Image (tube, rainbow, N blue to C red; front, side, top):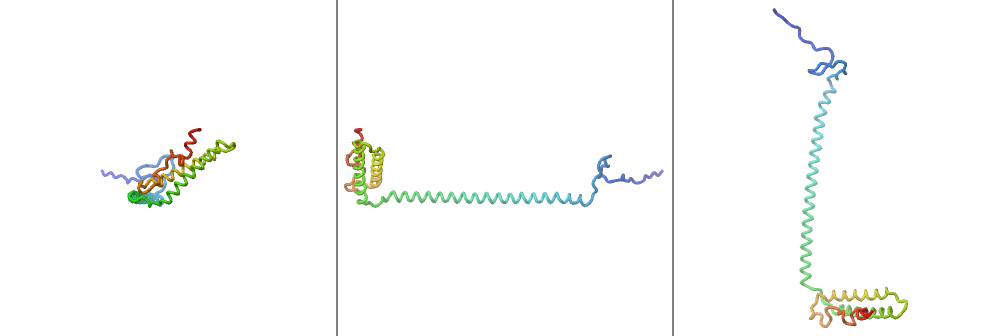
Length: 186
């Protein structure tokens, strides 16, 4: 017996390969140009994302390299500045400024004048009613400032170079004490 069966025919209507259509469900989309576009869009999107990631990586590496370059440059500048400062310190330590006896004598005279002004302000403050303390305070501050200026100017020189000028202002001497002897009696 020769039994032959007729070839199997697919059921009518569109369906997905391997699955028959669902009863009462929406009709499946026909295979055609839309399906091909979707199949082509996915690889294109993946390629674009890959290109963006590669570009981002390139930008990141360029940024890191430029930052490292700036850091190296800054380090070199700091080293150079430290070397320059060290050279200036060594040079400045070996050669004191030129001695100017007249300028130092003028500073000493200004200290003595400021001391006399402070003595007069103290006397006025004690004896003249209505004299403000601010006047005395300014005179004392000016005297102390000038003492400091003289001491700084005379500090780099030895006693031999100063030749008779004091190396520091003597605040125990009545002529340069900025009224300390008079203030002690208040």
